[in-house]
Image (cartoon, rainbow, N blue to C red; front, side):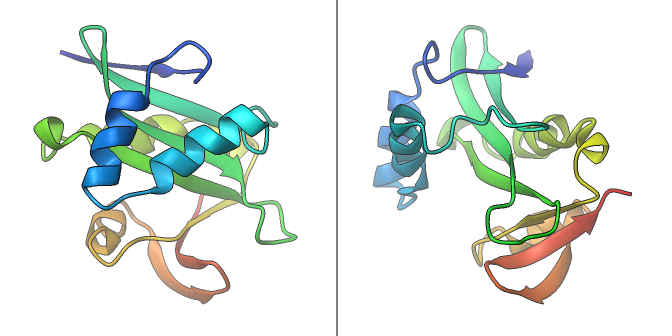
Length: 143
């Protein structure tokens, strides 16, 4: 049974997932760890959160929501969605995005993201629309 809860990278061991992501061609997890340690992004602003997926006590995925730093409007941004290889195609990524967006409309009328070519159809299945905007490939209106 997978459990979902907010996480802090101060007390959650993300390094195994970071190592796997690096080998899998996704360096953004290492960047997320660096930004957390430097204080550049700790998912602690109004409406922001970092959600983890746990199989027993083992972190198997995460997804973050930040205020979008690339626009002047008040918009959220889905960031750093990653699920380990052994747990993919089990609905965990979909649940992580749902958890990250839970109550997000209180803070953000719209959420944007930059999808990789491989993840574009996934986000479109979740209701994100293709956009032609600076630093975003998809967006979703929350209110």
